[in-house]
Structures are given as structure tokens and as C-alpha cells.
Length: 96
Image 1 (cartoon, rainbow, N blue to C red):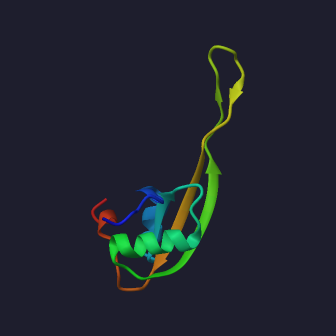
Image 2 (image 1 turned 180 degrees about the horizontal axis):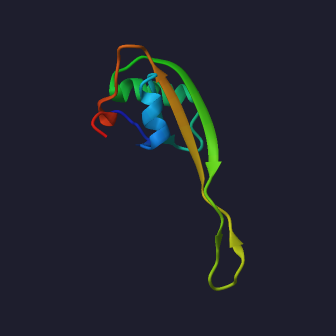
């Protein structure tokens, strides 16, 4: 069985659905994953040809701790915007 541990889940939002028309799909990936690992996992998991990958690390909003009143830092998330070859689609995003 193949190992797809660097891909956590697809990100489905208004912005990502607009990018789908251009052949760009958005995934949440492991924070330690690099572009070559992401490319090989997407190609083997979904059977598509990856042209380009952009990655970014975001941080969730800070929250206040109710016991101490101090601020807690948000969790870091790494996103990968994967552009695939024209004419190909990823079925997990269709119908959403």
C-alpha cells in the first residue's frame, strides 16, 4: 500500500474552488514535507501529472487562555497549491 502521509486533506474554500478552473488544487500537507514529496504523493494518489507546486505556511488566530488570561499561539498549517496538467482533474473536488 502506498504511503500518502504528507497529504493530510484537501482544502475546500471559495478561493480554492475559484482556482480549480485554472487547474490548481489546494491541499493541507505535513509541515515537514517538501515539494518533491508532495509532487510524488499527489501524482501517485490521484493519477495526475503535476506541473508546479507553491507552498505556504499559515498560522491560526491566537486565542486567549480562560484560566490564565494569556494568549495562546495558533497552530501552524502548511498548504500546497498544486497545478496539474490541463485536461486532467482530481475527482475529490468535483461536486463540492
